[in-house]
Length: 342
Image (cartoon, rainbow, N blue to C red; front, top):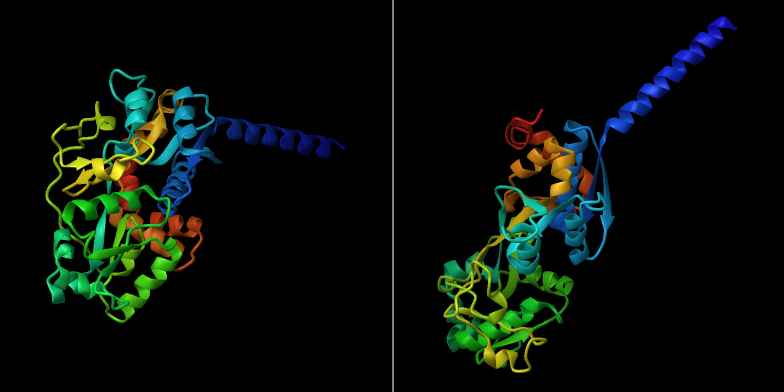
């Protein structure tokens, strides 16, 4: 009986110690975004925080706007948004990040860059000499992309309802390829099948796309050149560091004005979009080590392309993609991301 009582006491102490250890863990909540690159980044951050920083990491899904509102509140409902396309969110930047605003959201020091534009396979550039977006306005060039024999080329402009599809239409009007090219708006999955067929058979194809995405890891693609960006000119960009009343990029949404196509003009490339890891000021105060880590994380768009390829094409679970990368890149994780973090 005495032995039993002693063992029970030890068990109780052990249980208490385990409970204390569990209570000591830092609770962190990541707001989930619904695109593959974001899910990969979220998982990498989660595993590093759990392994190295003794964090108890959960996730929550919500509308994107609500995630930033939750970061601002600082109530632990959302502590991190792992893939914040900051240049696409001027209002959130003004309200929560920039001096003069509430300054309740903190960004990592070095963002990675997302890009978008009109792409072609590299062999179109190398063999046909098509290098500039304005080249598509030449009938002889457009015919290279003509698959139905009607004399006009085809270009995937994006899916129906995408904002980017409207941007492509404005580009066509400005550069003049609206007269030589026809826009297709099939669903993304259908287009990706068309892209694979074109590349397998080395056929010319032109299309709107963006990085990071797995197709840039799987295929050799080239973005068609445009003049250098010198500012967003639409009134909605006022207050942004990239606003220029005389800028080359004036775009209006159909919801902003009925004559959006006539009033819009895009005569230059869209600048790379800075993509940051965002966390709340409240998390920085509650868990300074986690905050220091998050500020020091540096990501590479090419690596994110590879993560998406592994998930979308190789069908690997995101957890495996993250753990494999962390195991193979401890120098980066431990020597850069966690440098000085105790």
